[in-house]
Image (cartoon, rainbow, N blue to C red; front, side, top):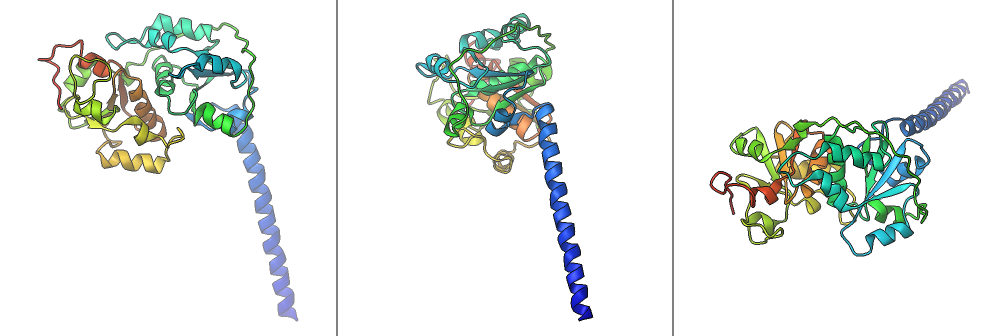
Length: 317
């Protein structure tokens, strides 16, 4: 009888301990969510996070135009509350073609028109999560020193699939002042690439499709086709993204890049036709996998295969 009493007493203690631990876990979880909602956003956010933070005054949502007919009309009719539309022309006018660094004055003016200051939390998205201009916009903002910017995983496609809030009402914009501080350490130029062609500590990643890489497909009406010598071909979409436009898991991404020798101990230079698809690869390596040294060659094949001296800037097929 005494033994049974002790067992019951011990069982009660165990139950009390488990209940207390569960209660503490719930409290900590709630505290984490509240702290998270008020803290600087991570580089990749989910639709749930955006829905929870939609009313934050310091949040600015930028919808990057999709290369599809009627995209602007569809946005005007149905978008995430507070979202602003950024057309490709305005964006590319700042990014440029790689012959010179992105334009600082134009960038500051664009951010001002979009109501973005240095303290604004920016979320970038598009029709689907795989639009490479999303990551390119993120890279451009990062290049000019904006730290509070993130990518919405899955974009509007995922947001709509989950039945989340949308509106047709235009967003109210209060003009802002943005002070840009260019960061050349994440930008590669043609001469920087040339200098590192045979550097064993540098890996060049070609984010284009296989046809562009091997010279059988000419996407940009290039004078020359092929790829930069030694470059590794990892087409950005099937490498980085699932079929629904969401990013693959860190485990999957790590495995595919490391299998090709694209490892964390090396500096990585990504390129494509114009530095746009390459920005998606930059985003994955820099922000999802935490590679310390990654550069986007904005000029990319549009510069290497067209505007440069063929004798000095070699290619392979």
